[in-house]
Image (tube, rainbow, N blue to C red; front, side, top):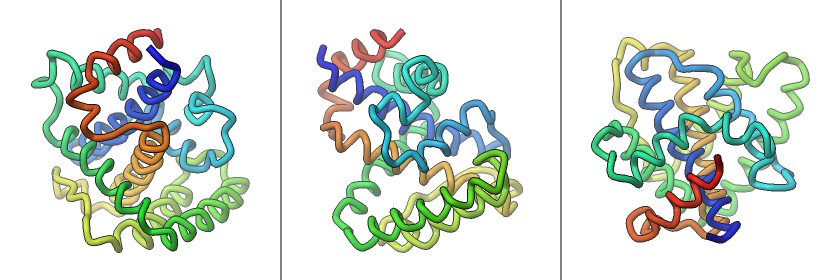
Length: 209
């Protein structure tokens, strides 16, 4: 097992965590902040020393991605049927959308500029979970990724999805999922790995305990 595979499991767990959070939020209108905050923090983490540092460092990384690690293990293992179909669809959609973004240098540059602006704004709020921060990240998603021909269709309870606060959370989480999908690709991750490298990824995932 290579260190690269270990790093890939961190990124992949983050993609699955974003997908699962969107799935839960769309159905129930709320998510656990302990799972949400590290995902949103990762968007603003531009110069991390390591993959682990993006999600809280060596000691916090496993706990910050508890939800994503659990869903990844289910999706890659024999328990795939227990994973919400929407979560699997969002995961593949995030990886696909990020591949489109990677071929659009202008949009990547725009996202980079907006992240710097949002990072500066964060100094005025106690947390990235503040509604103004969520609105800013959501706005970044709308101004960039929502303009691409491929869009992620979120399905759930319209009573929740029509609420501005929930809609902002959904878009902010999708932005975090794109961040994780970009990391996954940069670490050598590919869609076919989810089928043909399951065992290696599962081994690396279990080695993170």
